[in-house]
Image 1 (cartoon, helix red, strand yellow):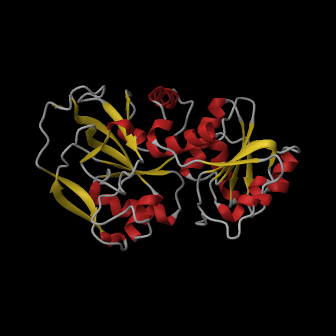
Image 2: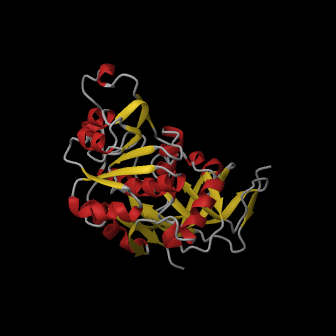
Image 3: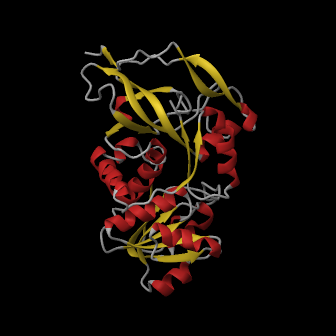
Length: 340
């Protein structure tokens, strides 16, 4: 059956949302009254309580995304909130706390920069926590990308050594905390020596200052090379990252903070003999509900730290949030909370 079940209070006919009608600067982020989205069979409508602000959404606003993104569009590739409506036979019930991310959200269909969002049920993760929305709102995309990279991408095990290149990014900081929870030894990079303390605070055992060449630094710490490397900076440094890894170790390419996603005239022989190269793009299913529950418990107990840069209240502050994200002056996740 696909008959909906609904929350106790019926959703209003309209909602407030951030709409990008055309690519542009911060003024392209317009707050409008729009119809509340109608849920399709197999989808879930969520009342949004908080969402993280991401580089992907800045790219969408500027018009730099691929052809998947059309306008007008409500951005937002992740969000947390309360189930408002779901199929009658769904395991998801109105009133449940849920997270959602990726899967075309905010790109091929409208995303979480709104009071309500509809998404396929397969990319909704239920959870229960007393943590505040501003904390939980920082997690979905960040944890899914970090956890998926370390597990699906690298198959990281306790006792192994991990290099995170791009360690002061939100995914890098999250990957550090998760890798330490898994029992790994972590080397993590920053381009500025002044930010080494941030890496240590996240749990990094060996902060490294990245001047564009890391292989020699890593080999000083680990003469045979690290077991695994998470590449978040991009193709401009990938060849060097590959040289930091031991034979039969693995490099996982997940991000391109430096903006370079491809290598001109790539040759497979740039990969050192015996070193493995993979990539991770990810989806919500890569962050199982039990894993998210474990991470939420670890946060509540103080064993995991959430790198929140700043919390914004209300859609009216979305321009400030994207401006602060672009400035790069405050490390961590920028989170918008929709207060009741």
